[in-house]
Length: 201
Image (cartoon, rainbow, N blue to C red; front, top):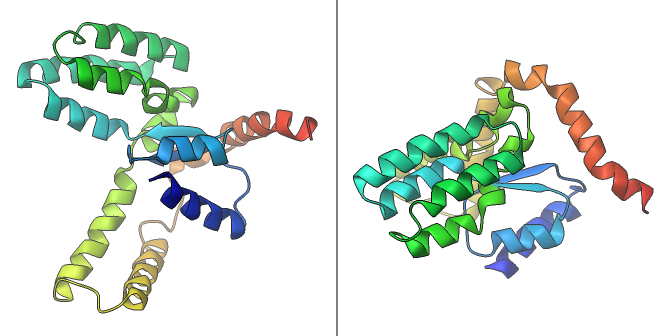
């Protein structure tokens, strides 16, 4: 709920987090409203891959296949405005058949498509929470090997720390080349986002 997320984000602020360009998350209860309140200038990207999974869950197989095919085309739109318009037109075609589901995702369009504000070459690193899920799966494997549970919170935190350190030394050792190539563009987006805030304070 909102209060839980507020505690999480306020803890991050207490530990030094100040300005955020983009937050990528799943569509969890209360998280949209909390991010809007605490980080009003941040883009909030809801996992696009999970949206596609939800389409398959709520639509017939034939409709879901067609919907997701058209949905994937929006990844290459040149702007958020164009992507939102394409999304709206796509949703209108299925609104009568799946009104509750379609109305729900239309209301969150800007969050599902926030990645279209960024250069095309790095969008795939922004629109999904899969990297977090991969890390969670590593912890889950450790839990299973430990007998199905962690003996304490401290034990869990130690395992999370060790797995993180291992990734830093291996898979995470070098930056993703494509992201590194767009460091300047990302920094420019960040500076422009918060320039108005600096000027108005």
